[in-house]
Image (cartoon, rainbow, N blue to C red; front, side, top):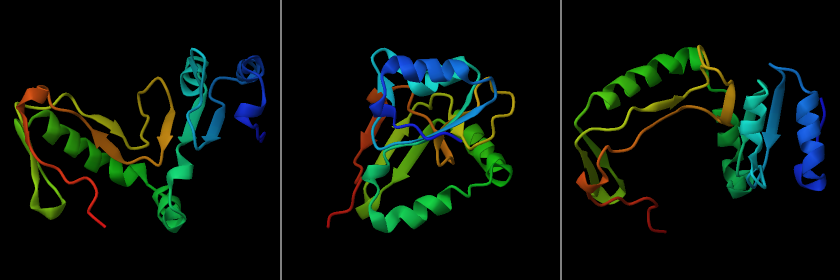
Length: 159
């Protein structure tokens, strides 16, 4: 195992080190900022080389009281959660209306169907690239037509 301070070395050193790794090796990145340099994104460079990558991102934004929750989320079991994620994807891919009920009783209504949902549940079966942003456990999509989104959403409750 090697620990490298991403911002303490020149870009060429990082790219050279990636070139020394073998396909199916694993790189775990822990960060509080993005792993971007010039025209490169580190995860994409690793995937191009066939290297597995696990990213733990924006950790400096986590309140210290939430660190135990973050660690618990890392115990996510894709063998249990993957079937749930696939059922949710199927429901989203085939619906014409989604209602998000928000804090304070507001609702955000999506009409006209959703784009095909993407799954990030840690099951990389049949996928070319292995890895991504952790913790995993999300199914995400967006409306096909943003003009058909109506309502209000309360993202953060008032303090």
